[in-house]
Amino acid sequence: MYVSNKVRDLPPYLFSRFQKKKEELIAKGVDVIDLGIGAPDLPTPKFIIEKFCEEVQQPANHRYSPYDGTKEFREAVAYFYFNHYGVKLDPDTEILALIGSKEGIANFIQAAINPGDSVIIPDPGYPVYQTAVHLAGGKCTYLPLDSQNGYLPMFEKLSRQEKEDAKLLFLNYPSNPTAATVELKTFMEAITFGVKNKIAIAHDAAYDLITFDEYKAPSILQVPNAKEVAVEFGSLSKSFNMTGWRIGYVVGNRDLIKALHTYKSNIDTSQFLPIQKAAAHALRSDLTEVKQHSLVFKERMERMYQGLIEAGFIVEQPKGSIFIWPKIPVGYTSAEFAEKLLEEAGIIVTPGSAFGPSGEGYIRISLSVELVRIDEVIIRLKEFMNKGVKRS
Image 1 (spheres, helix red, strand yellow):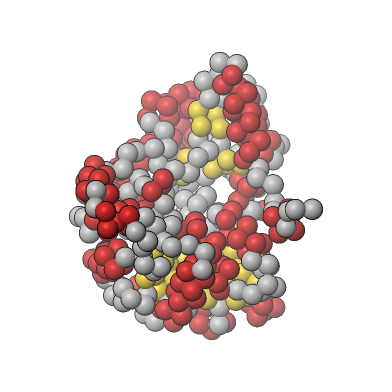
Image 2: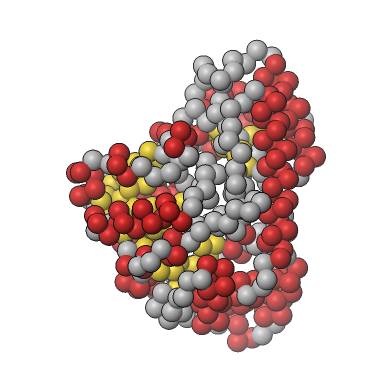
């Protein structure tokens, strides 16, 4: 009787069952390798930590932050966007500091829609989109993403009614969970779609700097007139290995950012000032350490990809992100396969069904372990598959 309906009716957290089994297996002495967590294991660069230590010594930095974040941080975001994407942003009206992009996305939906409004979300996609829409009293419309089409948005599959009802569309590239990437053309099509149908667009660019070889992830704001309908969420969690620092930003359409600013000013007072100042220092860097970290993930990805192929999986080689998205053998649901993999091989992966209906038939593997552990995963996977598990 003391719990709200919207909290009571939240969908169950599928992964919690695997965490419980992980603890049980560890207690029995099993060496469990956790490839379920979507967070980099690499350390935060030393120059960022040193800047934080410097700023935390200043008494003035222990006061409240401005609600929209410090001018220093917002100007650093503008500097990053101009130097990396060639996009000009007004630090005062087109940038807002966030306590991590997850928080920003959830609160943005509260600020952008009314109860009953429809939000188009990618399927498969980051579960927070669906959860946040639910908490805001909205309705989700799935935008199915197909492996045969490279997981690109297929707006033509939306019905006329679905387009008329939608107020907001979410995109996410490089993608969590599929690791799919796009070229600027895809964002051009998305902006055209949004303008034509009067639908706001939010692009989640959490993995924008984790890319491999010559591929460079574009920003949706590189599209001419994108600011008419679009915002983009960014995070330092993945690119600078700052997950626990909880710092991110949203940029783009000033009306949408103002709405989020108003909403957030009533529920939080932005992030700790020394964290914002350290993050600003990171964004103004030459990104050398970010590129070095991407090379680490590239090496892990190539090792895991080759091992999966040798074990008999069907899988695409990613151009970015910290994930790999293999198709599972026939005869299992993704949850059943993930559970069997944990029980018999001591490997934790995330069932594709956790990311929406179209995620069924896949598992998400995180690359957040060292090469020596990836080699061990490959050995176990081959043994597991050779025991008689049906192949795709």
